[in-house]
Image (tube, rainbow, N blue to C red; front, side):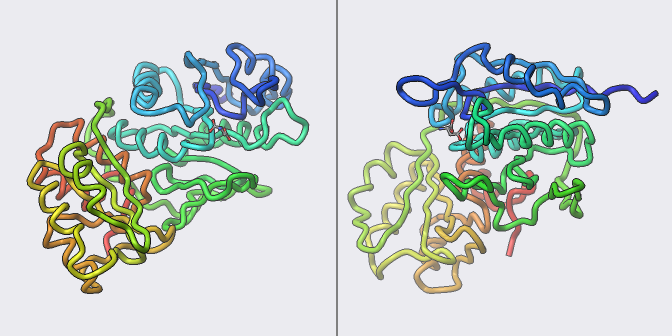
Length: 338
Ligand code: ASP
């Protein structure tokens, strides 16, 4: 008889395990265990066995950042050899940020790490959590995809390519620049994977608290208002530009700010406000100046992946030239160079 696979289920908070309160849904320690015990299908023959770990405190994912990413990554690293795969229950709001962060923290990962959650809590009749949870556990046990991914609404997505697309729909996530890794219909159908480079043994790299900023360009933006923040306070900036990497106006005040920020050790990465497609610096005069000022292209990276990658590279202690180079290099399948 084949040995039952063992899955590590880590509950971090989020809607899936929340309970009702007078103030709306809240996370509640110990509550998920009872909900899982009520899902008989989790314990039938053919399902892997699983152990449940609960992080403390359980959080709405809007409160999660570096500290919590380190806790989740640290727990996976600690238990890495004991399990065949990992399923992380997480709030949907920042799930794509956590998935991106874990993809960088967990180097040479060779086991499935699947983040999932739900839009409707498991305690409600119409919860989408039941399928998300059961299918994530099955995919983690199958072990076909051995990277950080996000399963939601029938789609398995590369974690650092995923983004939350809907605030209330049950098909809440997409990866607009990469086809899903798998689709779960009547059967789970895996697509041809785009491999991630692995070289060496699994290792875990926690992040440090690095001052990172995201600046979304809009028509009429007065860049000088952001001068001090960008030149003195931040080390990494993701600039969400129009289309293929364009910023408003000739002779605008952004370029000297970028030059000064770069001189002060900051790295400015240009991403697009369009969910689909790639930044192509130099395609228009409006973006050529950005390169001369010292900015780098984020190509088709999501903002979530670019933020996580900046944390990662600064945490490893690289200098700004190395970081510039690595921001434009595919490290974990997060970007495709045009
Ligand atoms: N606010 C919740 C969270 O991100 C939403 C959810 O889980 O769907 O934790």
